[in-house]
Length: 107
Image 1 (cartoon, rainbow, N blue to C red):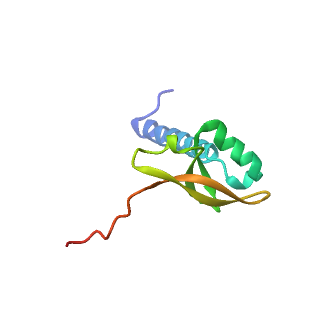
Image 2: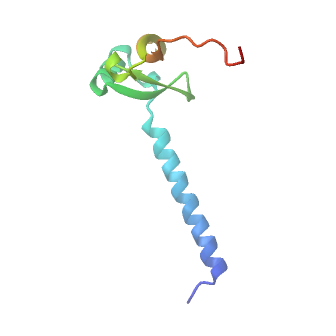
Image 3: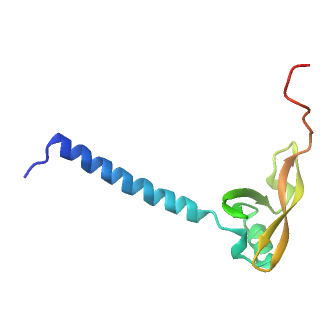
């Protein structure tokens, strides 16, 4: 039995939907939450990787945390950033521009 071009298109759409859903789930799971760690465990996790993107506060808020300035761009410095963990608040480091920009309008 052969499929018509309409059936082939429908099957392709269904297959693409299944694949995209699976990829979206894997990507969401790939970004761990700070709430899943104790503060000590979180510090060890970031130190072991050097830099890691994690969710904090909610699944839609995420940040890149670093173990040292060597993981920042040349024009960036580290800044303390407090996040929730299983054991309470924990202070990690993030990269921030060392230059403060003034406005974006015309002079």
